[in-house]
Length: 375
Image (cartoon, rainbow, N blue to C red; front, side):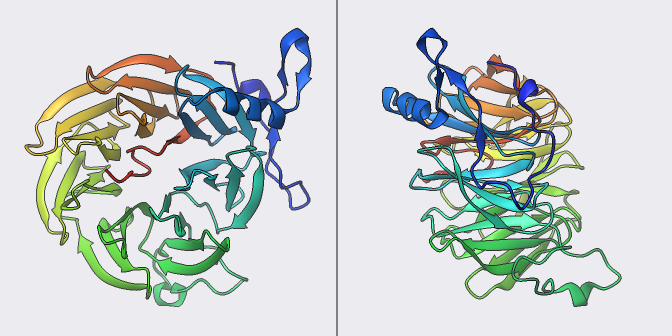
């Protein structure tokens, strides 16, 4: 893979810049420069290969061909600092939430151009999209309101305390922010209940889970996890809809909760567990233990540890390939994406040249730490 470092953007976007992303020039036969959109359409037409999208906090969005495991396009988001990302269920758009600008970028997958940008709030991080593609949910910090300069909801209740994080609710048909959910301090991972009516939020700052009915924006449950561990970060529903797995970063364990959010079991992990996903069959649980530099595999029934896979630095998020045969792990401080055989539990390739890769998703959509396809 080509080194990306030389193309790093010098600074953040400004209000006057074009809404279209800068893309890198490509050369065709004989060295002729090809227009990026023309080349991309040629590549897309010539190959039915599945794709992976990687958010680089330092250098935009990378697009990988999963047949060749090569970068086929790179979208420069002009220093926006993308972190959380998702592909809409119809495959038309890649969405990123951008730390430095506080925006959500909407990227057309046909042209790989940024077609719109919505302001979310300060330092957005985690993003989830409903399976029907109607809404997206993005976490952000409390210093900025999400709509029209209105006061941050709930701020008055927390004077003198650490302010709660917020979740912006975005209508993906009208491309508008339609609501705001007040979480708890340091909101992190997001998940949906099986009926898709409630949002489950991992709150790092007070070691809890919050459950909100996003129809009426009311909190229906708060689960105190302090006796079971510290700093919940990742939360994932099992494919059968009967259990939740919650990674506890500072205490080095994950929790198993039933569908009523009762803690059933605590399972030790390597240091710093964050990203979590089931395999497509629901038989195994994969945990990215970033501080322990391990991707760990557990039996989803007995919770026996099946494998420890040594990986790079700050490996937070990962996705299965659409066929389920491999995993792609974004390792931020190593600057690479590691390709792992999902059956042999071994790193089979390291793809270098990324700038602080944060997250990774695929098209067709697959099970992973940032989203879960329906079985």
